[in-house]
Structure formats: structure tokens, C-alpha cells
Length: 75
Image 1: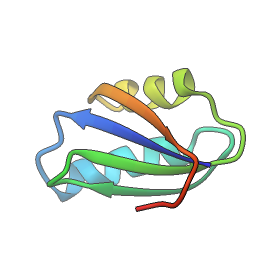
Image 2 (image 1 turned 90 degrees about the vertical axis):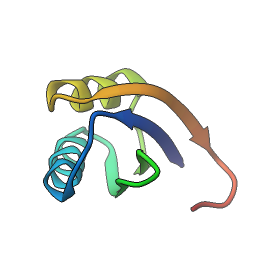
Image 3 (image 1 turned 180 degrees about the horizontal axis):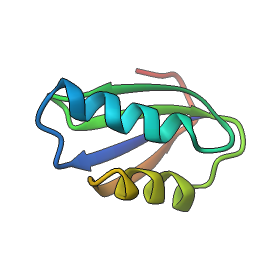
Image 4 (image 1 turned 180 degrees about the vertical axis):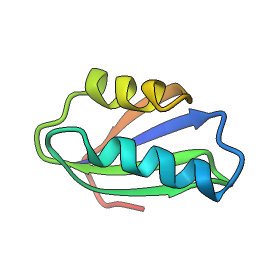
């Protein structure tokens, strides 16, 4: 399953890597793609819950504005 996470506060490539690394540490996360322009992370998960994903991003210093499940297709 993929989840789309809208993130505020990213402003550069360093921010993108910081968010990606934080999300990759969450149990159940298989892959992360972060788009700075769209302020979006697409996370491929097996058993990660939304609260754990949100907490990882917030602990990295950014704000989560929305998390959507994307069960069909992908970006």
C-alpha cells in the first residue's frame, strides 16, 4: 500500500533527505519518495500506521497536513 503525506516546512534538498530518512526509520516502511515542489511524500508501507508516520515527520521538524491511503495505482 502507498500513503501520500502532505508536508509543510520543507524548503530545500536537505529537508527532503531529512524527511525521507525519518520516514525510512518507521517500522513497516519499504520505500519513500519526497517531492519538494509538491510538498508530498509517497510512502510504500507494509504495516506502518498513520500516527507513526506523522510522528516521524514532526519529530524531524516538519508539519503533516494530511495523510491519504493510495491503494490503487501509484504516483
